[in-house]
Image 1: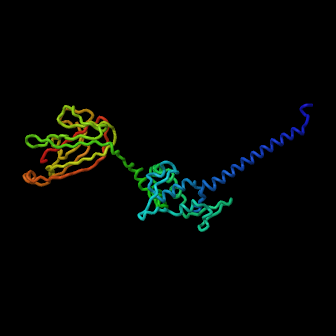
Image 2: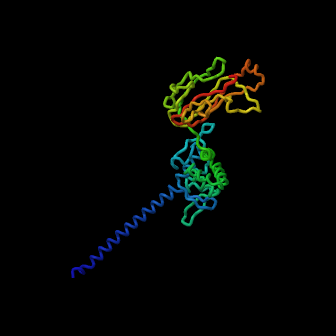
Image 3: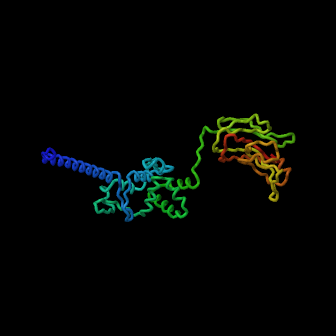
Length: 346
């Protein structure tokens, strides 16, 4: 029978195949053990934090060490844990060392002979840190995810104590970015303005025959015309500029003038009473022809009051003043701005 011929050879082939499979499995196991060894000894740090075992990724602890030494990054979590902060230099010109515990943990078990350690059943040596394990967990979450972690923490009303605990942990590890990041999350980040994005108008007040201020003359207009341009074809007697680019702007306003007559404490502004402040105003979407209608609203105001009772004194001895301020304003393309003023002694 040809199917039963040479049974010994068939058995030999089976054994060879089995041996190859066993060798392959052994090689795979050996590779896994090597990979595990590499991960255990190079990529993970073994800690015992207040009695709780923690296996920490070396990259996260590196980021903690960098933050402890520098702490100038606006958000540690931006760019991942591999992002490095600027090194902080103290007043003597030397590099700040941060918390030495960070470097000690990174050195590994070979350098832990003088500090408390514990051993696992498999022989793994862990450095003992006398810290709250949950507090350290929060610190490492903050180090890795920055403001993303803080947003989730701050959004819950009952996390005030947890945030205070995180601040204490940051103080211990000399990580000084937390308060700024908390402010950014709660109140918004600072707005930065480009130096090339400015538009300037310089002008003075026009008066009628009686000496009353009736208008503003914009004598000098300069700057980036992609921001705004002077509107010379509005058909009205007031000077107007058109906003060309939507955005948030820092409006600087400087006024050199004479203090205006102040209203007494018992007086109040009526609809027909002119505002005593000089102001930059913005028209509504459509300019109306009605002088009495509310067709504009002020963006910023500036001025000074003269509280002297004697009208002749106010006229003959005017109080000169200079006032300046900066205010962020949001404008959109198509807005029209103009300067308005109050009557009185100006």
